Image 1 (cartoon, rainbow, N blue to C red):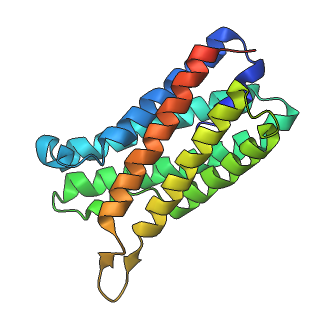
Image 2: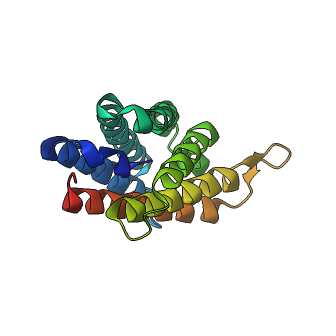
Length: 197
């Protein structure tokens, strides 16, 4: 998520809107799995936080994909596709929370396809700027790639074993979702501070 390096050639206003969209989405995904949050606000509000966050991610990813140049277009489109999967997944989770307050917390973990899209786009983004190890684009891409890895770990940890009906590691799924969101938030803040070059 948040391949913010692709905005390096955008106007300042576009960069700011994209960065803020990713930042707000990141905050939602950071707060949502935080221990005790669901108990504090209830399953319905917690589900809504994730859904709203996914919408901000999608809006920012769409703006980024529309404005990206040829070199940045593919990872931006892959990222945008990943956000669509998160929209569907978080919407289903929200519906389940409203219809069943005891819904399995696993629905909050990122969906495997969306996570795979983020990971692929993060790798492409990182590879395109890795030679410039001291540049702001490199730092943003590296932090965002770490976030993509955390989201992928979350998706794997949330896999429900069919025979038992339990997750491989629900705590790891929640913590890595939060850590991934924190990485995306840091990348978004760096983007907003840097602006276009």
